[in-house]
Length: 392
Image 1 (tube, rainbow, N blue to C red):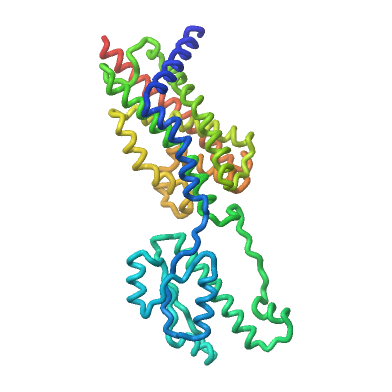
Image 2 (cartoon, rainbow, N blue to C red):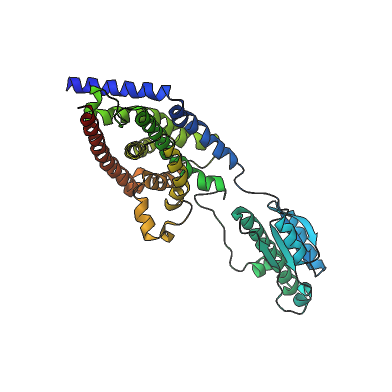
């Protein structure tokens, strides 16, 4: 027992030295988790887009259309950038990316209203930019509501402001945005990205280290030709301890410090965060060690991470509804710690859930930790046997 513990400490110290000497691993373990969340959060600091340029095609040239355009331009989200003579000219402006939407008023826009007929204003949006579409469409809808209210008040013949209020809004309501009070993109996407960064940087660092060791090895194994690495459990635990010491600090920084630096919504309690992040970091470590067993060259892991990062964010259910994900992809998503890590962290960070409220995700992460630990041990055992055969 004493000798095994001493060997474990030796492997841990050796892995720390290897990590410190390898600039590539050091970059992915330290610099990327330190600066990438800051860069990503800084990009989305504004939360919402403002002053989105819009082209106007006003064939009505009426007082009502000018009033609509005035209110639309006064909104903080949009601005009237171009006045075009027809839709073809407006399409040309959109094609040059000088505007991202079109307001179109037909010639009979005001005439139909005066005849007590329904009139319409058409809104064309560039759907390749979700935030631009949201700003243009919501602003146009709000202005149309104001114009409709004005017409109702004018024709109602009321005597008091209260009567006007009841006429335009007989059923009163309050719009309250829950969980994402700012309605911003940063509060929506950043929590999930932060969790994914932990997994992906671990994959990069561990995979890079394993690929480098395999390239330099004479036995074709990523395990050093040393008696200390002949024991499976002490090898796995020694290396995992090195990664855990680094990522305990990284996880605390990413989950607690970064959201507060940029004033994103953060409803986490330190205690619940610790107990949730513990199985998440451990499952990511053992998952990374499993993947590293398949890495033959150090650059291969970079291709794997680049290819999988965006799909993993999508199938986690944070940027696309979980209920709308096909069943096959839902089953596949259960293989990755990021799926349960993102779901649980978003609910705790943004919705104020406690650890008991994310029991499913919490249990799943512990299950992944245990399963991936034993799979890692089996793969390392195979590497030890392979190394000993070549030596003999």
